[in-house]
Amino acid sequence: MTNADLEKMVETSDEWITARTGIKERRIAPDGLAASDYAHEASLKAMEMAGISADDLDLIILGTVTPDAPLPSTACILQDKLKAKNAAVVDIVAACSGFIYGLEYAKAIIQNGQKEKALVIGVETLSKIVNWKDRNTCVLFGDGAGAAVLAPSDTPGGILATYTKADGSLARLLQVPAGGGRLPLNTDNIGNGDRFIQMQGPEVFKSAVRAMEEAAVSILKQSGTKSGDIDLMIPHQANIRIIEATAKRIKLPMDRVFVNIHKYGNTSAASVPIALDEAVRSNRIRPGDKIMMVSFGAGFTWGSVLVEW
Ligand code: ACO
Image (cartoon, rainbow, N blue to C red; front, side, top):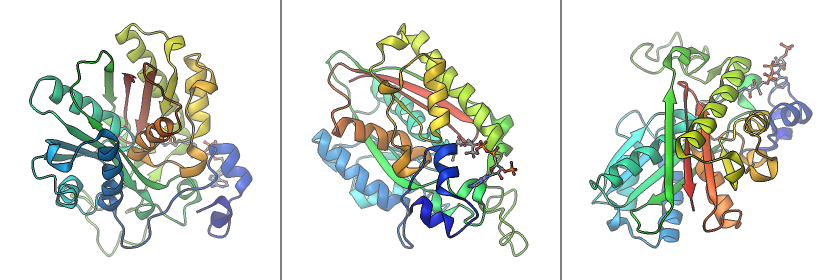
């Protein structure tokens, strides 16, 4: 869906969307396709790249805020699609930080010897919870999935450090109010927009810049790394201005920042793994490179992962 398509749906313009967000187009799931379908595609590609089969997996962690259904977890539905019968599986609801949280947990579980091969996925079909009449939000989001396989290795490097944080006191700034136990869907609220994403954009913007900087600075400090040592930062793709402000605050030139927001918009939990995948497959990442992934999302949640590739 291009900005021109959106011009026909709400009062907006390609100029406004491009200047304020950097987004030119986004992918939209057709009716009948849900998160597990996209997670399945991404998982097969990740397992192919890692040279493993579904039988090898003993852990699947799936980050999403747009599950196939409230029950069971989308990870369970994916496990069945993959026939990954040896895997323990779980969903993580950490919005745009779902993949980063998933990497931290998978790394810890592998490191303490409980599991060996983990599949970590970020997937969203945000188009299904976007209010297509609200120009403040509908221009921002898109659908997609990305996945990575984690396994123990004797080679030096790998995941060097992880950092995760949250602040639930700011939850109301970015939420879907209805559809849970607090405000079940009923005939009163089904039509009033409460089942869709509601966001206080400028407040979220300020928090995002602060938190992304904190996540980047904290992980650099924790690992004794300087920002000049980072070969590529892979930030959550929410807004080009948030990405640029974060890079500026940690003094990282934009040629060392991966950006694909123009093609996909904000795909929440899927944004970092989609960008990671594109960076690997286009040779922007080479063996030995230091990669810093940084995210921020609803909750609020934020975090970072430092990898030596
Ligand atoms: N087209 C045209 N005009 C618009 C649009 C639109 N699509 N949307 C809003 N406007 C108008 C507003 O109504 C406002 O008009 P007014 O001044 O007459 O009231 C004007 O544009 C400016 O609006 P602002 O909200 O001040 O614009 P801002 O520069 O803050 O940009 C944006 C808005 C893009 C939403 C920005 O605030 C943002 O990116 N916020 C952060 C989003 C984010 O990072 N989310 C992260 C997590 S997402 C997740 O977890 C799922």
